[in-house]
Figure 1 (cartoon, one colour):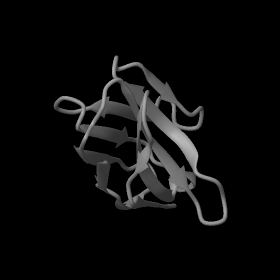
Figure 2 (tube, helix red, strand yellow):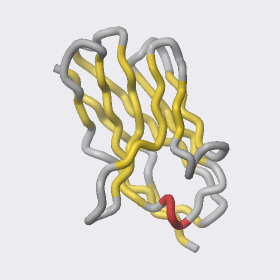
Figure 3 (cartoon, helix red, strand yellow):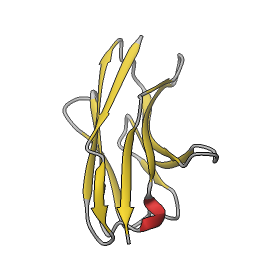
Figure 4 (cartoon, one colour):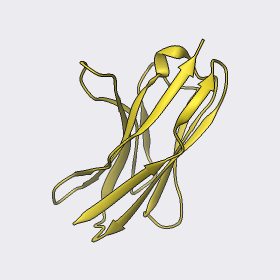
Length: 116
């Protein structure tokens, strides 16, 4: 079983920056894909960015060029660097771990609020 803990959310003004971190622990299997998703109450959880074990990345159109996903030491930590934040980026951000073989796991989420 894998546990994920997100951190780094907060309140920021439009145009500001934040860095989210997701630390995983437990039985991490490779290859895997890890990603950031976001959700606004009443709406579905959407992919923001993902990175696989080969460091290939994928971004939602709405954040491409402003957000950067990266891995930390080994495969236990991922980051999401967000710049030029917009009010529409306001959401709860969730980290997801998905091994190629096995079940996916989610973190509890961290709130990002961007004021105009």
